[in-house]
Length: 296
Image 1 (cartoon, one colour):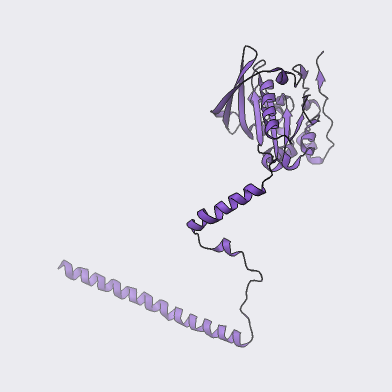
Image 2 (cartoon, rainbow, N blue to C red):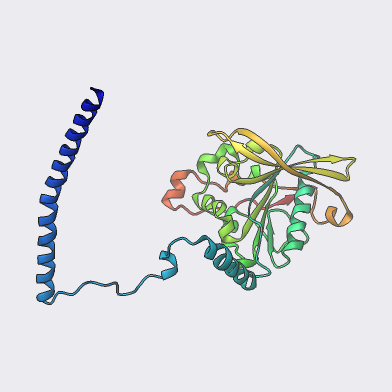
């Protein structure tokens, strides 16, 4: 009984499928025949089959071959890149911020970090908004950051007390040109090294681009331990999470202490430096920032 029902159902399905296939073939076969006829007529009338003027590179369209990729193409290109590299090419980038209260050692820790970069990349240029005895140029205005370039040899931009130049209170007036600059550090072979007493006082556009956050702690005035963090931010720019990736110590020697003036004061750039957004868009001239002065 059950077998007869199953046989009947199968027969109905087979008949239905055969009707569908027959209907499809009744339409498909005539279409194919007409295409062949029109194709033949076109050839008879002298029409040519179109071909690419320039063939694309064959190795991009070849089927994926893991053996060829891993044992031939990858090692060949790796060695080729090794021989063609620039030995003096700048290999650091991003925005690196040293934060801590007064006396924590953030300024001397930033100098130690900059010296490490200079020793690793001796042909790089160093420009700073404070006087450093081994710098190559002075930054008196944020536009100086845009105008300085050193090609593949790289450039270090040092901004002491960054919150005085790029304050969170003036985030809405943050220059769009500066935003482009800090988001393309790797392409331009630049690194920004800044200090600030409080991380959240720095302008939000810069906080969003922070590569690493450094928190120094100085013991007995001559030993500094630097903790390095990756920072995750909320949408409003506040800290969501911090993950320590490493730490390192160093001792303050005379060379490090004498490379900058501890008592040099960084004036507030936003007194004249930043314009309201409407003035930036309208192309009003950018005034010169106050000069760096030294406390007497």
